[in-house]
Length: 129
Image (tube, rainbow, N blue to C red; front, side, top):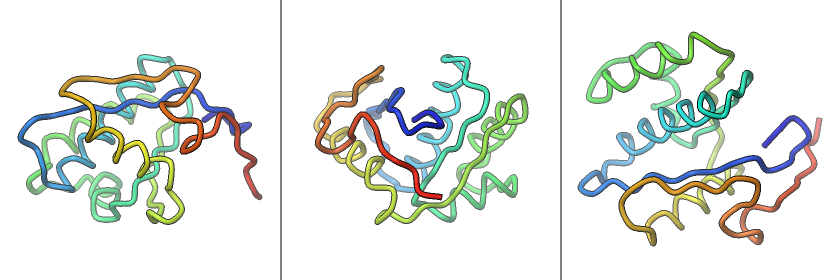
């Protein structure tokens, strides 16, 4: 979404054989960063419901996702990217997209200007202060 709450883009990446939630969320954060760079977005907020992943990214953590986290930190240092935790109850749109992604085949899936489902991800939302 842009600063006015208008839907811009969403994407999903189907990867066969990867089923660990932390690995999937780390890869999703990297994909969000790559997509934002491809679209030449300058200020990006990535919200995740995986607190451990967000903490690892923000603290340059290592572990099983260390290589991906290092890549995220390297790429995000070039522009204004913020990674933040949002509970699943608040981050409804991302959860809806993740559930939908399971019905898609392997590969990259992209929605520009309109979401995969207007009932789950409306075109415009009002932000509260």
